[in-house]
View (spheres, rainbow, N blue to C red):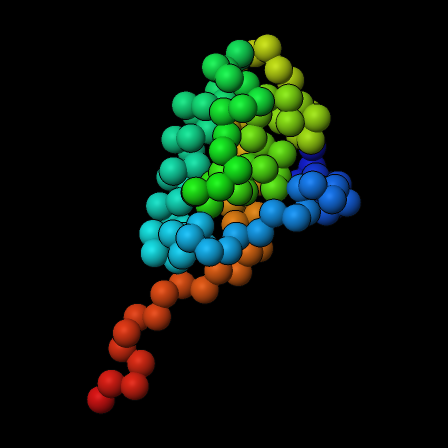
Length: 128
C-alpha cells in the first residue's frame, strides 16, 4: 500500500480522477444519512464487490453515480482491483485482507471529508 498523502497527490494530477466531486443527489444522500452511515455502506460495498481475489465483473462492478461511495471510489482509484493495484499497490489475484479493506475505507473517508458537504440544518435555528 502507498502512503496516503502520496496517493492523493498522484490522484490530484489525474484529470480523470480529479474531476469527481460530490454534488446533487449523492451530496444530499451524504448529508441526509451522515458520514458514519456512508462509511458503513463503504465497508459493505468494498467487502462484497472488491474483496475477492477475482471479483465478478471486475472493472465494471462500480457504477459512476447514485451513491457517494461510488463517486468516491472512482475519485480515489478504489473502484476495481486493477485500479487498487495501479493507484494503491494492492495486488490483484489475492483476497483483500482486513488491513487492505481498512486502508480503502480510510482513503474513501478522507476523500468524502474533503468534499465538505455540510450537514443538514437542525431546524432549531431562530427558535425561542
